[in-house]
Length: 287
Image (cartoon, rainbow, N blue to C red; front, top):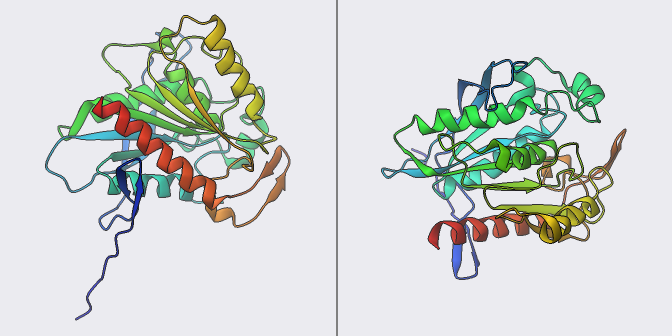
Protein backbone atom coordinates (compact mmCIF):
# COMPACT_ATOMS: atom_id res chain seq x y z
CA UNK A 1 0.00 0.00 0.00
CA UNK A 2 1.27 3.42 -0.89
CA UNK A 3 0.94 6.24 1.53
CA UNK A 4 0.61 9.82 0.37
CA UNK A 5 2.62 12.19 2.50
CA UNK A 6 1.23 15.69 2.32
CA UNK A 7 3.61 18.47 3.23
CA UNK A 8 1.81 21.63 4.16
CA UNK A 9 3.91 24.73 3.83
CA UNK A 10 2.94 27.82 5.72
CA UNK A 11 4.01 31.37 5.11
CA UNK A 12 4.10 33.68 8.10
CA UNK A 13 3.42 37.38 7.82
CA UNK A 14 2.04 40.12 10.07
CA UNK A 15 1.26 37.50 12.73
CA UNK A 16 -0.98 35.75 10.17
CA UNK A 17 -0.44 32.55 8.26
CA UNK A 18 -1.77 31.13 5.07
CA UNK A 19 -1.50 27.61 3.80
CA UNK A 20 -0.14 27.12 0.29
CA UNK A 21 -0.97 23.47 -0.34
CA UNK A 22 -4.43 21.91 -0.62
CA UNK A 23 -4.90 18.16 -0.50
CA UNK A 24 -8.53 18.09 -1.57
CA UNK A 25 -8.64 20.62 -4.40
CA UNK A 26 -10.86 19.67 -7.33
CA UNK A 27 -12.80 21.68 -9.89
CA UNK A 28 -16.42 20.89 -10.64
CA UNK A 29 -17.85 22.37 -13.83
CA UNK A 30 -21.06 24.28 -13.15
CA UNK A 31 -23.21 26.78 -15.01
CA UNK A 32 -25.14 29.86 -13.98
CA UNK A 33 -26.99 32.58 -15.86
CA UNK A 34 -25.54 36.07 -16.18
CA UNK A 35 -27.61 38.85 -14.60
CA UNK A 36 -28.83 42.00 -16.32
CA UNK A 37 -27.85 44.14 -13.35
CA UNK A 38 -28.79 47.49 -14.94
CA UNK A 39 -31.89 46.38 -16.87
CA UNK A 40 -30.12 47.14 -20.13
CA UNK A 41 -32.41 46.36 -23.08
CA UNK A 42 -29.37 45.28 -25.15
CA UNK A 43 -28.05 42.86 -22.53
CA UNK A 44 -28.44 39.18 -23.36
CA UNK A 45 -28.44 36.83 -20.38
CA UNK A 46 -26.47 33.68 -21.24
CA UNK A 47 -25.40 30.52 -19.45
CA UNK A 48 -21.86 30.92 -18.12
CA UNK A 49 -19.58 27.94 -17.59
CA UNK A 50 -17.40 28.04 -14.51
CA UNK A 51 -15.33 25.83 -12.24
CA UNK A 52 -16.28 25.47 -8.59
CA UNK A 53 -14.10 24.25 -5.75
CA UNK A 54 -15.43 23.76 -2.23
CA UNK A 55 -13.16 23.01 0.74
CA UNK A 56 -14.16 20.16 3.03
CA UNK A 57 -15.40 22.34 5.87
CA UNK A 58 -18.55 22.23 7.96
CA UNK A 59 -18.99 25.98 8.55
CA UNK A 60 -20.10 28.62 6.09
CA UNK A 61 -17.17 29.96 4.09
CA UNK A 62 -16.21 33.08 2.13
CA UNK A 63 -16.02 32.75 -1.64
CA UNK A 64 -13.85 34.22 -4.39
CA UNK A 65 -14.98 34.67 -8.00
CA UNK A 66 -11.96 34.56 -10.34
CA UNK A 67 -11.95 36.32 -13.73
CA UNK A 68 -9.63 35.85 -16.72
CA UNK A 69 -8.04 38.53 -18.90
CA UNK A 70 -8.97 39.72 -22.37
CA UNK A 71 -7.66 36.65 -24.23
CA UNK A 72 -9.94 34.30 -22.30
CA UNK A 73 -9.54 31.47 -19.84
CA UNK A 74 -7.71 29.20 -22.27
CA UNK A 75 -8.51 26.01 -20.40
CA UNK A 76 -7.98 23.87 -23.48
CA UNK A 77 -5.58 26.05 -25.46
CA UNK A 78 -2.46 27.91 -24.26
CA UNK A 79 -3.72 27.40 -20.69
CA UNK A 80 -1.55 30.04 -19.00
CA UNK A 81 -4.53 32.02 -17.67
CA UNK A 82 -6.26 28.82 -16.58
CA UNK A 83 -3.14 27.55 -14.80
CA UNK A 84 -2.57 30.89 -13.09
CA UNK A 85 -6.14 31.30 -11.86
CA UNK A 86 -6.24 27.66 -10.82
CA UNK A 87 -3.10 28.15 -8.71
CA UNK A 88 -4.65 31.19 -7.02
CA UNK A 89 -7.80 29.13 -6.47
CA UNK A 90 -5.84 26.24 -4.94
CA UNK A 91 -4.22 28.55 -2.39
CA UNK A 92 -7.53 30.24 -1.57
CA UNK A 93 -9.13 26.79 -1.27
CA UNK A 94 -6.41 25.67 1.15
CA UNK A 95 -7.38 28.64 3.33
CA UNK A 96 -11.08 27.76 3.44
CA UNK A 97 -12.32 29.92 0.56
CA UNK A 98 -14.76 28.52 -1.95
CA UNK A 99 -13.57 29.46 -5.44
CA UNK A 100 -15.39 29.91 -8.75
CA UNK A 101 -13.31 30.37 -11.92
CA UNK A 102 -15.54 31.98 -14.56
CA UNK A 103 -15.17 31.36 -18.30
CA UNK A 104 -16.82 34.45 -19.79
CA UNK A 105 -15.30 34.33 -23.29
CA UNK A 106 -15.59 30.58 -23.74
CA UNK A 107 -19.26 30.71 -22.75
CA UNK A 108 -19.84 33.27 -25.52
CA UNK A 109 -17.82 31.33 -28.12
CA UNK A 110 -15.11 34.00 -28.21
CA UNK A 111 -11.96 32.17 -29.25
CA UNK A 112 -8.43 33.17 -28.26
CA UNK A 113 -7.79 34.52 -31.78
CA UNK A 114 -11.01 36.50 -31.86
CA UNK A 115 -10.41 37.85 -28.37
CA UNK A 116 -6.92 38.98 -29.30
CA UNK A 117 -8.35 40.91 -32.28
CA UNK A 118 -11.51 42.31 -30.72
CA UNK A 119 -11.35 42.12 -26.92
CA UNK A 120 -7.73 43.14 -26.20
CA UNK A 121 -8.22 46.62 -27.63
CA UNK A 122 -10.61 49.56 -27.40
CA UNK A 123 -13.41 47.44 -28.88
CA UNK A 124 -13.27 45.41 -25.62
CA UNK A 125 -15.53 42.69 -27.00
CA UNK A 126 -17.44 41.07 -24.16
CA UNK A 127 -16.10 43.41 -21.48
CA UNK A 128 -19.26 45.13 -20.27
CA UNK A 129 -21.29 41.90 -20.40
CA UNK A 130 -18.83 40.42 -17.93
CA UNK A 131 -20.17 42.55 -15.06
CA UNK A 132 -23.40 40.62 -15.54
CA UNK A 133 -21.35 37.42 -15.24
CA UNK A 134 -19.99 38.60 -11.90
CA UNK A 135 -23.44 39.29 -10.51
CA UNK A 136 -24.70 36.01 -11.92
CA UNK A 137 -21.84 34.31 -10.07
CA UNK A 138 -22.78 36.14 -6.87
CA UNK A 139 -26.38 34.98 -7.24
CA UNK A 140 -25.22 31.41 -7.87
CA UNK A 141 -22.96 31.40 -4.80
CA UNK A 142 -25.65 32.93 -2.62
CA UNK A 143 -27.86 29.95 -3.41
CA UNK A 144 -25.38 27.61 -1.65
CA UNK A 145 -25.92 27.05 2.06
CA UNK A 146 -22.18 26.69 2.68
CA UNK A 147 -21.40 30.25 1.49
CA UNK A 148 -21.11 33.22 3.83
CA UNK A 149 -23.16 35.65 1.77
CA UNK A 150 -21.47 38.67 3.36
CA UNK A 151 -18.03 37.50 2.25
CA UNK A 152 -18.10 37.16 -1.52
CA UNK A 153 -15.01 38.62 -3.20
CA UNK A 154 -14.29 39.15 -6.88
CA UNK A 155 -10.74 38.68 -8.24
CA UNK A 156 -9.50 39.50 -11.74
CA UNK A 157 -6.43 39.66 -13.97
CA UNK A 158 -5.95 42.41 -16.58
CA UNK A 159 -9.34 42.88 -18.28
CA UNK A 160 -10.76 40.72 -15.48
CA UNK A 161 -9.46 43.30 -13.00
CA UNK A 162 -11.20 46.00 -15.04
CA UNK A 163 -14.39 43.95 -14.66
CA UNK A 164 -13.78 43.90 -10.90
CA UNK A 165 -13.61 47.70 -10.85
CA UNK A 166 -16.73 47.97 -13.00
CA UNK A 167 -18.57 45.50 -10.76
CA UNK A 168 -17.77 47.62 -7.71
CA UNK A 169 -18.96 50.81 -9.40
CA UNK A 170 -21.33 52.52 -7.00
CA UNK A 171 -23.75 52.85 -9.93
CA UNK A 172 -23.92 49.04 -10.07
CA UNK A 173 -24.63 48.56 -6.37
CA UNK A 174 -27.43 46.09 -5.75
CA UNK A 175 -28.46 45.30 -2.20
CA UNK A 176 -29.57 41.85 -3.33
CA UNK A 177 -26.21 40.83 -4.83
CA UNK A 178 -23.56 42.50 -2.69
CA UNK A 179 -19.82 42.06 -3.23
CA UNK A 180 -17.64 42.44 -0.13
CA UNK A 181 -14.35 43.35 -1.81
CA UNK A 182 -12.21 43.18 -4.94
CA UNK A 183 -8.71 42.05 -5.86
CA UNK A 184 -7.26 43.28 -9.16
CA UNK A 185 -4.05 42.33 -10.95
CA UNK A 186 -2.63 44.85 -13.45
CA UNK A 187 -5.88 46.40 -14.79
CA UNK A 188 -6.09 49.10 -17.45
CA UNK A 189 -7.16 52.07 -15.37
CA UNK A 190 -8.17 54.47 -18.14
CA UNK A 191 -10.86 52.56 -19.99
CA UNK A 192 -14.10 54.38 -20.95
CA UNK A 193 -16.53 54.86 -18.07
CA UNK A 194 -14.06 53.77 -15.39
CA UNK A 195 -15.94 54.26 -12.11
CA UNK A 196 -15.24 57.36 -10.05
CA UNK A 197 -16.98 55.87 -7.04
CA UNK A 198 -16.68 52.38 -5.56
CA UNK A 199 -19.01 50.74 -3.04
CA UNK A 200 -16.50 48.22 -1.64
CA UNK A 201 -12.75 48.08 -0.90
CA UNK A 202 -10.32 46.84 -3.52
CA UNK A 203 -6.58 46.13 -3.68
CA UNK A 204 -4.71 46.54 -6.98
CA UNK A 205 -1.34 45.04 -7.94
CA UNK A 206 0.64 46.68 -10.73
CA UNK A 207 4.03 46.25 -12.39
CA UNK A 208 6.59 48.95 -13.15
CA UNK A 209 7.61 47.23 -16.40
CA UNK A 210 4.06 46.64 -17.63
CA UNK A 211 3.74 48.07 -21.16
CA UNK A 212 0.30 46.56 -21.81
CA UNK A 213 -1.60 48.13 -18.93
CA UNK A 214 0.86 50.78 -17.66
CA UNK A 215 0.72 51.17 -13.90
CA UNK A 216 0.94 54.97 -14.20
CA UNK A 217 -2.69 54.94 -15.34
CA UNK A 218 -3.73 53.23 -12.10
CA UNK A 219 -1.59 55.54 -9.98
CA UNK A 220 -3.23 58.54 -11.67
CA UNK A 221 -6.66 56.97 -11.26
CA UNK A 222 -6.19 56.44 -7.53
CA UNK A 223 -4.75 59.94 -7.05
CA UNK A 224 -7.70 61.47 -8.92
CA UNK A 225 -10.12 59.55 -6.74
CA UNK A 226 -8.36 60.80 -3.62
CA UNK A 227 -8.50 64.41 -4.81
CA UNK A 228 -11.86 64.64 -6.58
CA UNK A 229 -14.07 61.67 -5.90
CA UNK A 230 -16.72 61.26 -3.24
CA UNK A 231 -16.12 57.51 -3.28
CA UNK A 232 -16.27 55.92 0.17
CA UNK A 233 -13.58 53.45 -0.86
CA UNK A 234 -10.31 54.41 -2.51
CA UNK A 235 -8.37 51.55 -4.14
CA UNK A 236 -5.23 50.43 -2.37
CA UNK A 237 -2.48 50.07 -4.95
CA UNK A 238 0.76 48.14 -4.54
CA UNK A 239 3.41 48.53 -7.23
CA UNK A 240 6.22 46.10 -8.03
CA UNK A 241 9.09 47.79 -9.83
CA UNK A 242 10.21 44.72 -11.81
CA UNK A 243 6.75 43.43 -12.63
CA UNK A 244 5.75 42.85 -16.26
CA UNK A 245 2.21 42.20 -17.39
CA UNK A 246 0.98 38.73 -16.41
CA UNK A 247 3.65 38.37 -13.73
CA UNK A 248 1.55 35.70 -11.99
CA UNK A 249 1.39 33.52 -15.14
CA UNK A 250 4.15 31.32 -13.76
CA UNK A 251 3.66 28.63 -16.40
CA UNK A 252 5.03 31.04 -19.03
CA UNK A 253 8.51 30.21 -17.83
CA UNK A 254 10.14 33.18 -19.54
CA UNK A 255 9.63 36.64 -21.03
CA UNK A 256 7.62 36.87 -24.27
CA UNK A 257 7.09 39.80 -26.61
CA UNK A 258 3.54 39.64 -27.94
CA UNK A 259 1.63 41.75 -30.46
CA UNK A 260 0.22 43.87 -27.61
CA UNK A 261 3.28 44.06 -25.34
CA UNK A 262 5.60 42.14 -23.07
CA UNK A 263 4.54 39.42 -20.64
CA UNK A 264 6.81 37.69 -18.14
CA UNK A 265 6.36 35.61 -15.00
CA UNK A 266 7.82 36.57 -11.65
CA UNK A 267 7.51 34.02 -8.85
CA UNK A 268 8.80 36.36 -6.14
CA UNK A 269 6.30 39.11 -6.94
CA UNK A 270 3.45 36.61 -7.22
CA UNK A 271 4.26 35.29 -3.75
CA UNK A 272 4.29 38.83 -2.34
CA UNK A 273 0.92 39.66 -3.87
CA UNK A 274 -0.61 36.57 -2.29
CA UNK A 275 0.74 37.59 1.08
CA UNK A 276 -0.78 41.04 0.53
CA UNK A 277 -4.21 39.86 -0.49
CA UNK A 278 -4.46 37.57 2.51
CA UNK A 279 -3.50 40.48 4.77
CA UNK A 280 -6.15 42.57 2.99
CA UNK A 281 -8.83 39.90 3.42
CA UNK A 282 -7.87 39.09 7.02
CA UNK A 283 -8.06 42.77 7.96
CA UNK A 284 -11.34 43.17 6.12
CA UNK A 285 -13.04 40.25 7.81
CA UNK A 286 -11.61 40.60 11.32
CA UNK A 287 -12.11 44.35 11.84
